[in-house]
Image 1 (cartoon, rainbow, N blue to C red):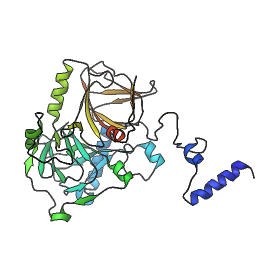
Image 2 (cartoon, helix red, strand yellow; image 1 turned 30 degrees about the vertical axis):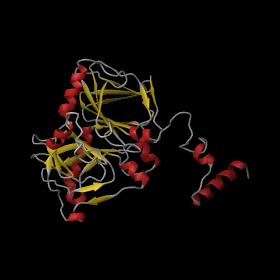
Image 3 (tube, one colour; image 1 turned 45 degrees about the vertical axis):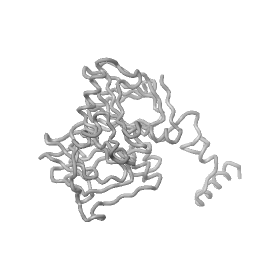
Image 4 (spheres, one colour; image 1 turned 180 degrees about the vertical axis):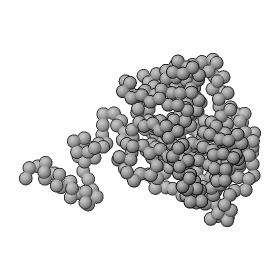
Length: 361
């Protein structure tokens, strides 16, 4: 029996004992996913989802189930590269982040709950009255573009003020928490018998404390970001004001990061939330970074090109694109109005692990 045949037979035997060897994990001759590569070679792939397709599915799903059936009604992104590697991996937009849309009918009032996972939502479509999310008793009205945080272990529930369906984007670090085996999930009713939280404040209270570059010293420092509300009106005004003076960074345009005022760092320890404005006719210079991304236009349209033009994605408002770590990309605004792009990144996770790198071309 030749050596290669003996090797393959032994490898099959080893698999049955749940062990492996260097060749099966690190050698590209014997592994579909070798660990050691000359440059990052993520199993996640670039992929785009059309919002209108997801919205149609959400309506169909809402016609079959409601929050009483399964807590909430969502359509989430599942990256095909990750699902190929791990078919049972639940809801991976990227290896560390969840992304999807949620449909909320006027009568929907899912129960208050909390989880170890960090989460946030961005308003997409609403009736004129808007929707709301209540975080630790603070009821926050949400409209298009508004960002509302539900940080780790904060109680939250939500609803719809209007008479028509509402949609928002949900972003979480749930895949990271899942991989680490660390999730805690519980319902408020199991703690004090109440299905929905008592309301003790509104978004006005958050704005009053934090929206003028102040940090209240009379309150104890929170373990999580205490700013649960970033109104799009103010974000947009700031971006437009900055655009009057500059084209911004050549690689990222005019960009704002939502921060935790207690630390000056990102909104979450694991995720960065950003808005980028790209002026009409402007194309950013190529950038590569060890971060996975989910992005979608809030206003305007984006043309995202990978590598040397091998792959191009044209995004309309609310269309979603995921990019793997170390993807080399540019963003071009071919339109006649400013492009405002929302970006969810896991760069803080890479930075905390000492594994963040970037290359600006």
